[in-house]
Length: 77
Image 1 (cartoon, rainbow, N blue to C red):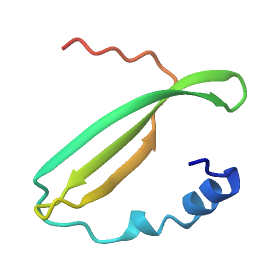
Image 2: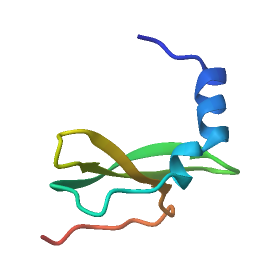
Image 3: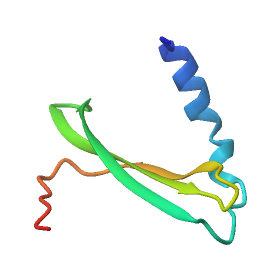
Image 4: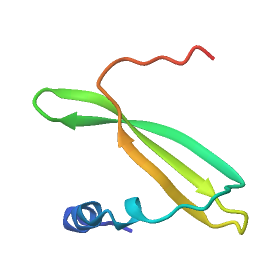
């Protein structure tokens, strides 16, 4: 389902989710990132990180979203 730029901007501007209280315990926490092209001056590939928690009731909560720097991080694992 397509979502307009205006809808995304409106959701991001509110950030009510970022100030809500979090649960004390999460059954699982998933941390992942996707690299996206960012046009803030010169185009750069930057990681967009997300942390998702799963409550003991099975509900998913967004714990955090943030953009990484334009460096070239590598995983050695």
